[in-house]
Structure formats: structure tokens, C-alpha cells
Image (cartoon, rainbow, N blue to C red; front, side):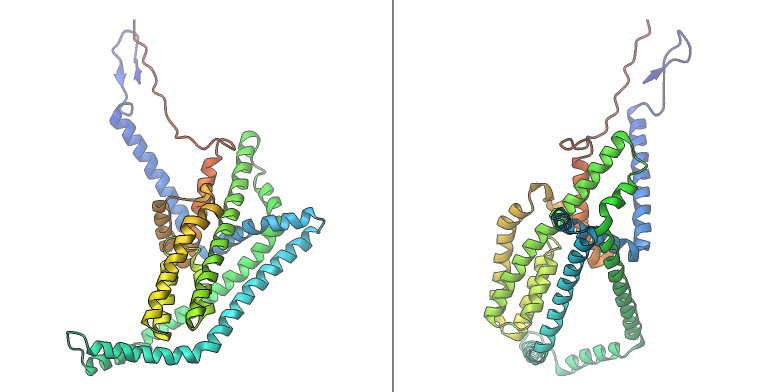
Length: 372
């Protein structure tokens, strides 16, 4: 902390050695780290058409890796085991998509007539409000919507939507190709990336890779089990009440269950609205009660058992991660944010060893030796 310019002279203090200097040093380090992190995030966001399929493929491959490893241990050739799991996943996704399209097509006429009746009921309710809403005001609002739909602005938005669909299809194809190679050569690819590391650095990198795969796989499998319960329970309740589009709504409940905290309210609101329009207000209230009950069972019983303590994150961390993921990547970012945060926390837990999490770096003060 002190230094001597010459024997016998009074010690001089460095401008960076006092309390304010150390604070300035730490602030400079924080600014540098945040700047680098923002630069990396910006670069990743600019090539989202590549990075998002890679991350999705990594997460799915982590969840399916135990199945491929089990097949290989039981004598199935590596390529055949990969092909079997890969084809099974594609068949499952194609079956879900076909089920959605078929269900919507078969019930579309019923839902359309129910929607017309529901809109008529809403219009009747508007006439009974304390303040006056005339038919002319309602017609003006409808004309405004029609004008927007037929305007050039809406056409530009439609073209942007077509471009977005094209990007989604391209990303899906790229994700499928990357997923196949991750399933087939995932461990070999990781070993190739670890070639520059030796000794303790190599051991640490291996621990990090193993923990990331374990965390992502466990998170996806646990969340999928919870989401399946939500979809079956909510779908059964909707079917008993005679709600149209029961299967699509159950699939929506399954997908939104992968978005913690906000997924359940989204699915419940959509199911209640469809029930209100298609069946009635009393049944809509019952649907809301069913969704609340299912989520209470999920949060208090299923998640602690299936997810485990190591995969559970604090609600504030999840909320901040969801917000950042949504801002950066929209719906896809919201889906990827929580598993990636869980993987990062897993890395921290094994940074110094299997049972030795990372410790805060501390700088020891140098003791001053009195001049005698």
C-alpha cells in the first residue's frame, strides 16, 4: 500500500491505493466487463438466424442424449441410434402440427359462429353501459379497422410477416441439421473444442461441458413432464365443458409451460376467452379455476420432485432473465432464457470442482512494513 522513493524518505501513497482509487478500479473493471458482454450479446443478436437454431438444437440434444447413449450401450450402431431418435423427434413434431391443423379445421365453423354470437353479445353490452356508445361510433371503429387492413401499411406488415415466416422455416431446417450432428457427434465436437486446454484448465472445461449438458437436459425433461401434465389436465377440463378447439388449447398450454411465471397466465387467458365466446361466462370462470388449480399442483408438487433443487432458480432471476430474453429474441428468447440461466448457474457450481462452486475473488491488502 505504501512505497518508498528512497531510504529514509517518507512513504508516498499511490493515487490508486486508497479507498477511492480501489473503487475507481472496480468501477472501471465493471464497465469493461459490461461493455464486452453487451458487445457479445449484440453480435449474437445480429446473427440470430444462426445462433438461435444452434441453441435450440443444443438444448434438445442435451435432453435426448441419454436416449442415444442408452441405445449405443445396448449394441445399436451410433448412426442408427442417432437416426432412430432424430426421426422419432421429427415424427412427434409433425404429429403435433398435424393434430393442430386438423383440430382447427374441423372446429373452425363452430368457432366462427360462436365468435359472431359473442361479438353480438359484446355489442349489446356496450349499449347497456352507463355512458352512451352509439351505433355510428361502433361503425366508425369497424371502418377504421377495415381501412387499416386495406392500406399500404398493412400490406407492408404482411410482407414483413412473410419474411418472418421464411426466417422461421430456414431456422427450423438449420436447427434440424445441427440437431442431427449434435446427437451423432456431440461428445467428439466438444473434445475438438477442448484441444487448446491442458491440465487443470482441461478438467475444468470438461466439468463445465458435462454440467451444462446435464442441466439443460434435466431442465427440458422436467419441464416437458410438467407441461404434459398441464396440457392433459387443462385439456380434459376443457373437453368436459365442451369447449371448442380443446386440442389446440391443450397444445398451447403445453408450449407456454416452458415459459415460467407468464406461460400459465397466457394459456389460461386464451382458454378462458375461447370458452367465453364458444360456451358461456359461467364455463369461462370454471376454466379459470381449473387453470389455477393445475398450476398450484404443478408449483407445489410436480416441480420440486421433477426439477430438483439444483435446477430451481429464484423468481427474481427468472423474471429478469425472461425480460432480457424477450427484449433480445422475442418469444424464442423467452423460451431460451431460463434454461440458459440455469446452465450458467450450473457452471458456477462446478467451477472449482464437482462440489466446489466458484468463490468471489478477493484481493489481499499488502501489509506495510514500518521503517525502522
